[in-house]
Image (cartoon, rainbow, N blue to C red):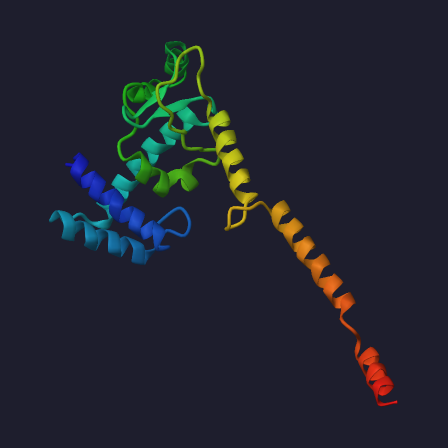
Length: 206
């Protein structure tokens, strides 16, 4: 009885509870489960008890665990966000088939509702899990790896970090600051001190 519609609603509710802190560790708190049960019946009209919803949670967690093992440490893999498929060669899929036949169910399409499943389970079932980086139309001769994609993203971050809000670099700002400081110091040196002012006043009186 768990069709795609009810599964999507269930996962949306679970994501809400995760994000507000009602799943501090591997499982929902009592308050979290109470909210999941009440929200699910309110949105679907289906009255499932805690055990039934917990069973669905566990089955989705198991499904995500298998997916995580498939892509874990495979940093060169790509993800087609349009087709929702892993981009890999036939030889790679053949090696996965020999390791675990369950992997093959995602050869033509990845897990449904993957984004929500990552929020719910990636810190629960997989220590080395890393979401695949989307990229478009790679060729077999020039595949873009996750490592390269992340490196490019990091380079962009570095470039952004090297600029201030006004668009200038810290070095430019430092130069301006140093220039302003030097000018200010020169002006200070040109200004007479209080002693010099008093001495000048006394000389005028005499």
